Image (cartoon, rainbow, N blue to C red; front, side, top):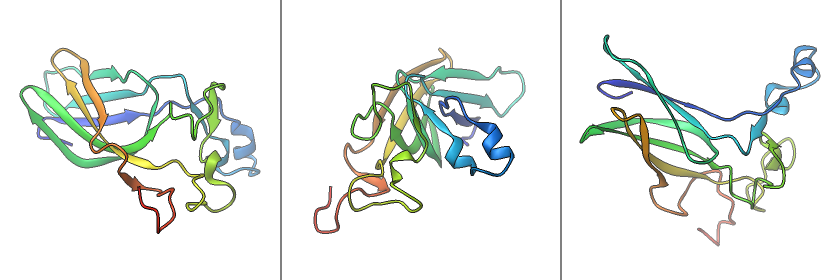
Length: 158
């Protein structure tokens, strides 16, 4: 939320086996698929009347885990800060496939943070020119700095 806008990341999901969830055989996270080739959409909704909402697409697949509460407006642009996964990262998301299981790299019932199986969550800044309806940039704030889901051993930090 900023002074003038509400913002939402629309993560790219693939086909899901809803029936297994509905009859109680699977949890929601077990049926979710990440669409690795679909761009992520960002919806920007004006807080005041008289303006139309804007939807923009990032130039690649990105999975927003958390949209941080801080959003800024300056120079006619909206600056959003989020943590998430780059779905083009071949270390965790097989690029030979169109989709991958959500949390599929976790390695079992509990995440395995020490052997590099869980994709690290990184901090991104997304800049949107709301007037033009375009994405100016979507980049890591500090490349390589892990915000959540550390994938290194304690004695070998990133």
